[in-house]
Image (tube, rainbow, N blue to C red):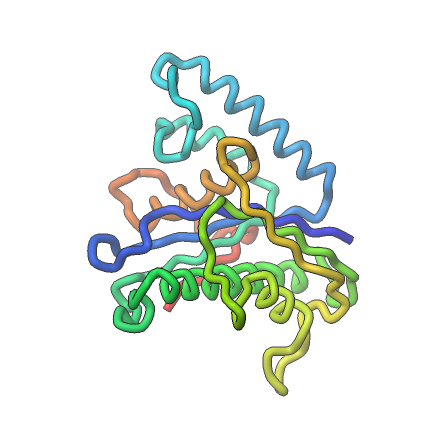
Length: 228
């Protein structure tokens, strides 16, 4: 079977000027549900574009949308499994994590992998996925530079985390994982990345209540990981 993940981020990974950083994503296990969600979002987004306040805006990013419009678009996702990782940057080891762009991206990649794995574990617990499933994972992420050198590759880390046990005391999550692919997408060309942006923005707003855009983080369809 195939599993598709679409993800985006909200906030700025900068512990000097910002406290919170959020990664969020959507998980699809049914291609028909994925396509229906994409079509519903595109139709709703097209309807929002008719408003004068959005004229001339090339991409309707979540932070540009009015409160009610963001709520309307988020409701489209009511039945879709979602996940998020909320990073409290003030508690990170700044000398290690923020040493240079590569160490920053390494930490963000770690946070993404940990949050995605937790979400998959929740789906296994619910019976939506089985540990014995032979799965091809397709990760679609908002286009950004990721840490990548001879000893480190995000795709390889995801594959290892999903297919193999990380210690002698843990059980592999999906030992029959077939493959893992990663596609970096431009959000203005991929509606489901924009959907993930809506989720990330909504979660970010919970941690920054001045934005007045709330979400129930106890919703069973949202897997939440707090770091560190």
